[in-house]
Amino acid sequence: MKKLAWITGIVAVLLMLGGLIDFFTKGAFLGVNHAINYFHVANSMWLLTIACLLTDHKTEKS
Image (cartoon, rainbow, N blue to C red; front, top):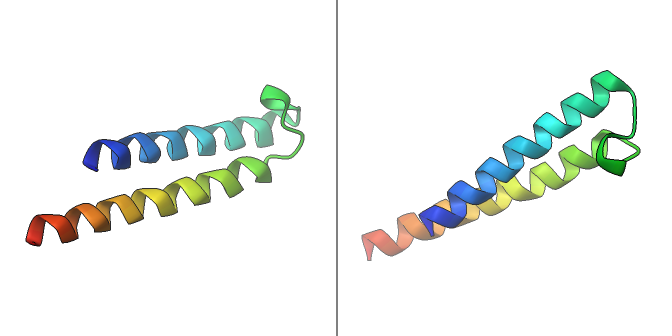
């Protein structure tokens, strides 16, 4: 579960960087028209990361 949490966390950071690049270049970076789309997906990835870490923490205590 920790590996999945690391992977989703890294993907979230990359998506946020993509959003920042798109915001500052004012273009369709990777074919995405609006920078906010990157942050919506990154938010979901962060929530998945938190859920994985909480699940892993709970299973370690049991």
